[in-house]
Image (cartoon, rainbow, N blue to C red; front, side, top):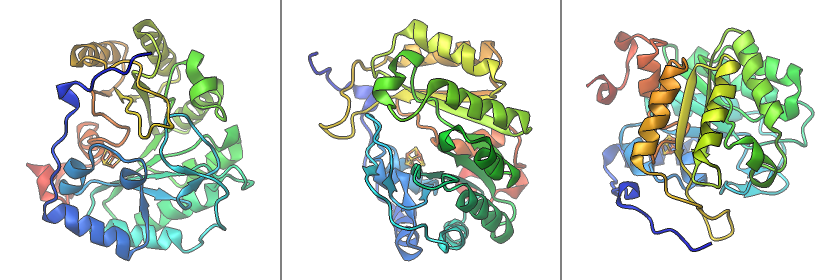
Length: 298
Ligand code: SF4
């Protein structure tokens, strides 16, 4: 396969203003990890300057090795029981009105880290009242009790990524299962939580498969959907198969709204957490008067 040339719509400007520097300092001082840095996200300059970041809990080493993900794979160290407190402290210091928390997979733990997830949600709610929480969780190997532990802690949005179409799961996410991920979404919807999922395109799927996947996701009751361009983080990862034109992203947005998603974020640089704070406002999960970040109030 010849390597497609990066199109102009994927070029991002590197900015490093005062908010970016401030967030960098807070992240380092509170010894938290961010997926923005670990996954080499192309939006880091824009997001951090807007004071939006995604904190990654349960360490920075993942037990899985997905073909698209830049996070380190290996044997993680022991669970850090103080991490929920530090995470809440970091969220408070960053002045966030909406925080996105994700984690590595911890398949070696009986509960997949669900207890730490729940503790983190409780700590943030207690220390930063008014800050809504969006959790982007692993599948906890499909263990309903572990998933319930997280849902019972009542994050404002529960998100679990489908990542790609059914045909590509074995290749792109070898330790995950397509049906199992759909079941996570179903369990969250049944628990009454706002539920979200995201996929990447340009990793080998067809357009027809994307539309079929969107239909299947919608049938779970999931209300929020996002889709963005896959970018190869290093030469060792799955290559980009095609760069999807912005017009095709516009079609996915139109189709998603037509089939009943409440919110669809679709575009080349969209990531699960991209503009998550604005989605919260649009979905009226948080009232604008609760905003702590003036940038977002504009
Ligand atoms: S899109 Fe998400 S992961 Fe990327 S920089 Fe923004 S908040 Fe971080």
